[in-house]
Amino acid sequence: MALGGTTLVMALAVGSATIFIGWRRPFLMLAVLVLGVPLRDFITRWLLAREVASVESVTALGRWWFVLILALLGVVAVQRWAQWRKQMPTFRLDGLDVILAAMVVWSAFETLTSPSRAEAFTSLRGYLQPIGVFLVARGLRPSPKALRTLLVAWLGLGALIAAFGLWQGATWEEETYRAEGYVRQDGSLTVPPTTVRGKVFIRPASTVSGPNELGVDMVILTMLAVFSLPAANRLGRLGLASLAAVFTLMLGITFSRSAMLAYVTAWAGVGVLLLAAARGKRPSPASGAPWPILFGAALGVLAIGLALFRLGVFGVLTSTITNLTSEFHYVDTVAAIQHLIANPGGVGMGMVEPKGAISLIEAGGSYHVEGSLFQIAEEMGVWGLGLWLAFLGGALVRIYRGWHSLTEGVLRAFSGAALTGWAGSLVAFLFLPLMQSISLMVWLWFLLGTALAASKTEAAWSDPRLRAAELPQVDG
Image (cartoon, rainbow, N blue to C red; front, side):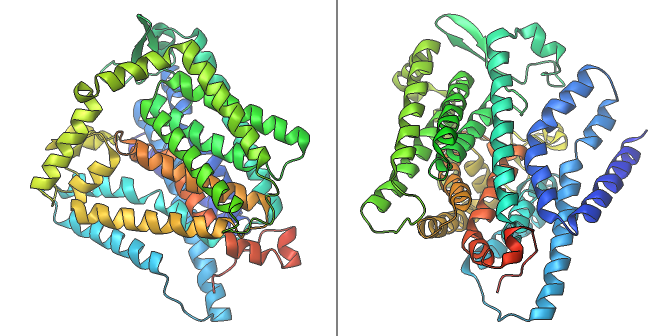
């Protein structure tokens, strides 16, 4: 079947299922996306390695996530419009929405004025697609049961991803990775090796695009486990602390220095939240004593300390620090800063490499920079990056202020993970093009939307119907 035919069949199947199920259970379909998208790369590799279908057909099938987002966004938009017309709530202009709209408009303007509109549109699509997840998550009011079920399933999936990655790191050789499809079109491995204590070690990718994405995924999962501790019972706390340690161990085996910086940043965010609560500046009615979180933190720190020492990661980090000025990512970042100082308008949308889309890889680019934040600046100008940072910064500040007043443990878990996960990821985005990793961005945008809506979701739960069943609600 031709590429167009495969894409059409997939789009009709996924779109129809999303509309049919999502009309009554939109959060269920959103959960399917969150839990399914980290397996997309693994399934694609499995199909290609076993030659189950052609490259074109597998690539087309792999676009299911985009169709699901579009269909679900349409469902939620229609439902919200119908409810808005019925209830006619008072219109209030949200500052974050204004910045988001300005960010999208500016991105579109840069696309239209780009030297190459085809590549610019492909790049724009990569930035905006995951934002649909944010809009859907922010607009839904799932039931407590639905959110708890997703949290448990998410952590369970994370445990499987970590276990698979640990198995790869312990047993897989280069031949195994090649046999299982972890190769690019040019024949090189998608999992870059590193040298540890004089020996070559292939960094595992588990089910996602690569070890760097896997490392940041582990940061997010660690934060979800840690912020779930206070609301759990004694046995649950032991299980969550153990999960946090496993996620931390997996992070160490990725040897991703940017992910490790993200991990430290995320824990700093945990510390800021705890200090604010301890000083009484923000009430924390449902959190109880912070000792469960501190206990989890101690276990996590101990686990990563032992893992890094045993695996030789300390040696890798020491070498990086002592040779910082000659490290590729340091040189790349400094060069990007100097270029932006001289050229604040950047080089144009779609003109930056490396990019993940096949069409952009084939087209190449006029400027190379690895860090996602610098890619935004080069494609949209420093003022475009300013809009992105203003939106994300404003969102995180709002989540921080709202986290302390939440009383529902599951909402505190998602909101805390959103705050610390995004803070850590932004540090990683300074050095790596991880905003191109669709599964990572689906997770991050889902957390951001859920966290921003947390206070309204909690208020909606005062309706007895929402204690048991999910009902779409309109912000008002």
